[in-house]
Amino acid sequence: MGITEKLDGVAVTTKANVYFDGKCVSHSVRFADGTGKSVGVILPSILTFNTGAPEVMEGVAGSCRVRLKGETTWNTYGAGESYQVPGNSSFDIEVVGEPYHYICHFG
Image 1 (cartoon, rainbow, N blue to C red):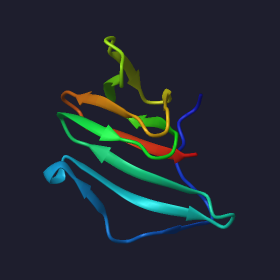
Image 2: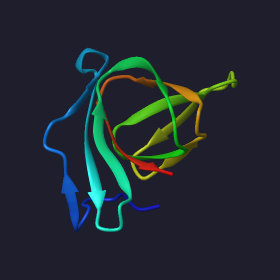
Image 3: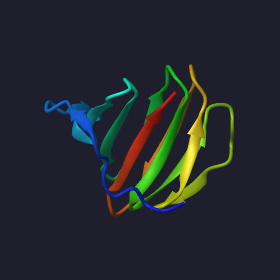
């Protein structure tokens, strides 16, 4: 999978979504067909995210370790790699060193 470098034809919400005291910051983007994504960065930390809809997390820069709800194994993902998170679930993410830049694809 190649790295997504830009998203064309989108509306961007200018106010950032700030989570975990600023350790994760993202912006929501909406396409003409109504689908949405978020583009963001996670600073070095260990965080737990809850999901409503299923998500595909696409790494753009940096790397992270991820543990899905109910699993004991951590998996490592870097730029150009993605992982899926089920809806109505959660996942732990660990970022060490360089920030992890991502695109979250919903649904």
